[in-house]
Image (cartoon, rainbow, N blue to C red; front, side):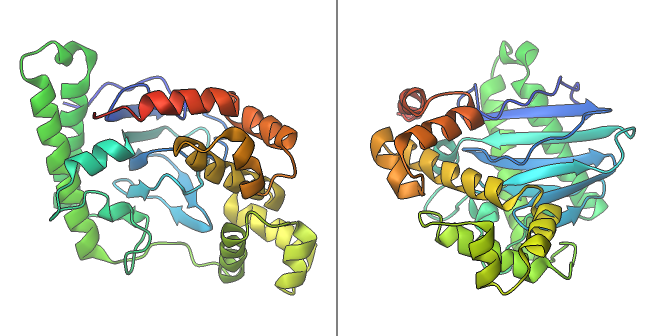
Length: 297
């Protein structure tokens, strides 16, 4: 039995320990901004007319496609036809929880690991494989629902479904190795620009500097970057610096020590950017992260 669709929200942080699973079904959703999470995400596309960008990679989704998205990856669904029904299942996984479930022999984070040879964000399955994966996700959603939580053994059954699902997806990802990214003429140079930003985020960066370094017109770079990545060069640089800042704050670095390591000129600029992006101050985030870090004992 299919899990009941839930109301979509723009929330990008977890409320429950371990994992959260959703089934969404929308029309006229509007634009979802480029964003990132502090957790792993498994996304099962069920219906709609949607492209999905992960960093500079663009995927034209077909029903049954599965995306693996890591905490550091900026991503965004691009709805091609707002009038079409957009349906998907989304599984969020806490990093520490997933590491705790893993064993010395079996890392359940392997399918997310961008350093693995031939890694890709998108897994496209055969009908038989998809039916098995979707059944496990539906069972996990059912056992994790509020009505089921009061049933005897629901927590054990849910964890069993989750372990089986993760093991199966990692196996399928290891066996696949097929890439489904949209090939684009500007793709290689934009990928190089992104790599440069990701390596030099603490340094001074600007559209003019990047255009000069890669010997292209700044107007062409601005247009192609926005088309492929889904945001401006300036906005991407700020978001990438904030991703690193959140990681440092989560590791216990003081807010007043973070800004200079992430390319912000002063604390005031860092504070404003952080508050505007996450609707919480760096100090408040540090307090919340400290509580979350107690997860799993």
